[in-house]
Image (cartoon, rainbow, N blue to C red; front, side, top):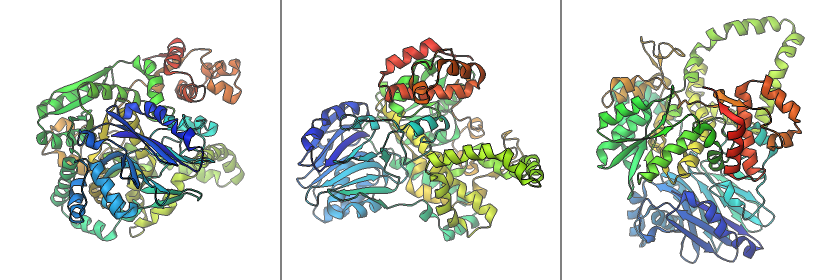
Length: 620
């Protein structure tokens, strides 16, 4: 919905206040409709507004009443349900926005109690001038970004790292930047690639008082949503009852997320998740628009998206993404992405469809993200059932090596070191997550518990990368994304849903990667009453495109650049790498180079693009 940035410092407040205007300029793409600022003796912030609920000036931020200040990015979907209790307490609201409701809740109930009441996606700063305290709060799943850093003067925060530049030197962390090759920070909801800059973890708020150490408080835990009694209740239900409950939850979630005073639409691919959400949303709005990223060529899904649009009787608008745009749009997308584009190369066409939506007058869209994590939609999650068979030759070989331990250590040492260093750079984030949360499924036999844990694992590991892509690429064109599959009630249902309702058995050869097993079984069963058979049975493709595998780099590309300077890489060594190493991995290093030139060498996106055009090409 918006962009926020600010400071809370002990001294030099005038110096920091002078940077607010530039911070707002750097976040203007997140909120082009209005820019407001707040300043007190020690605290200041800027808010750039994308007006979606209550389009009047009454919704402009920051909100303040003399003691409290709120700068907020997001949507509180249950804000109308919260108002009656406040009205009975004599609270008067400024306008009809969810911001007004959130501000009233925070002033009346306090931060902790408010975070338990609100449902939605949000990142906000709430300042109490009397208590000299500020709280930075982030939603339960990390949908909205919130970055922070403690300096010698105090606390700084922003929706995007680039907005911190007017207040502090924004320097790259060389280790995390280089490990961007492996998507280290893509998959983290805490780390960034910038020195000392962190993210407020999902389900947490950071509390800071002048002269004291900051404190991180957890107000929501995914693991605590796991309930053995609820699991057993769902396990006893019949298929029709389970499907009915799922559809009811998804319908309610979709209805809540259509909350808007501005035009809305959906991003669709013809895949089952976005198609199901669109089919539930379309009857509820007269002017509901569909948008798709048509990756022109062999990977196009335009035919399936067109089938959905015809089925719903809606116009489909497309960005026809040409293969060469991988090169021409790489730098501009990375500028907004604030990471090397490695895990999701399709962030680049994602940005292009966001521009089409914005040109059509839409400000907010629905997306099917979260379904694959919640209901096990990734092939690698299903193939785990075949692991004992697939890995039998390897396990047999290792069993032989175990007869000679020195030989086993020799063979496995290099791979073990690669795994260790990658985990080390990530602060063992996902290993610690498993250690802390896997025991919540100990009420099940080990194999069943391990499979049930996969949803928690995917929320901690893969979902952050998708949410980052959706936020940064959508907001690059001032488009807000909403996720009906990430509704709190639906997530609670999905976490406790037995895996037998997620992974179905079928006599059809559904997918060569997991024959006779059907991913997201409950989603596909629910779609039978709403979608054409072709879309119900569509195999997950994952938004494919001509990405890193098709990139070819010419000699001299890395000369004088970020990577060669960081590693002391000679031109001869770089050219040898280009000539002899996997083009796929070299192309991923190009993503690191693009990022490093933008944020390490301070080159402009146009400069980086010209360098790419001169030395990089696609080989289809």
